Image (cartoon, rainbow, N blue to C red; front, side):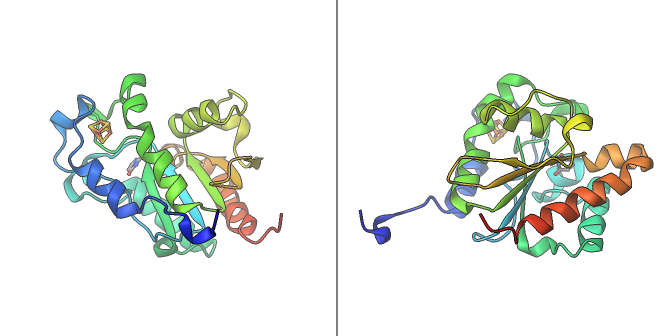
Length: 198
Ligand code: URA
Ligand code: SF4
């Protein structure tokens, strides 16, 4: 095979599919879908849980309270938000801020996996339990709560991404400020792993 025969799905094509998606009941309650944002050739990908009200209103990920803390913490460790692809496991806001249900996650999962394939980031950071739970199922990682695995570095043997690093959800850090140093340390580690040779 010649390498220039390769045609990856482009992020914008995936986003267009998401914008018209009605594969699960969350389509009914949304104002906007939130496909995610960041460069096609990002080396870092961050995956949260689901859009909240601010994200639903704007169509952009992590722009509310959690987003503010996330963006500030990223900046404090030298991670530039505009170089990172940021998205969520589900692309439409669940009602009343409830967790996305298993069926909704199942219906939406192909999008986040295609985004990962399309980007081929070096490092993927999962934010919170919903995100870690999904990727740990997909890649056969330990079934643990985020508190037990945060800051660990899992080497993925997928061609799309080399390292998976779980950390807390920024909303958990807002709720419990004591988690902030660990959250910061995990993002710093993720940034360092961009430069690790394999
Ligand atoms: N919480 C998330 O998990 N994702 C967002 O985009 C905003 C808040
Ligand atoms: Fe489609 Fe995902 Fe939105 Fe459900 S949450 S309607 S699967 S984009």
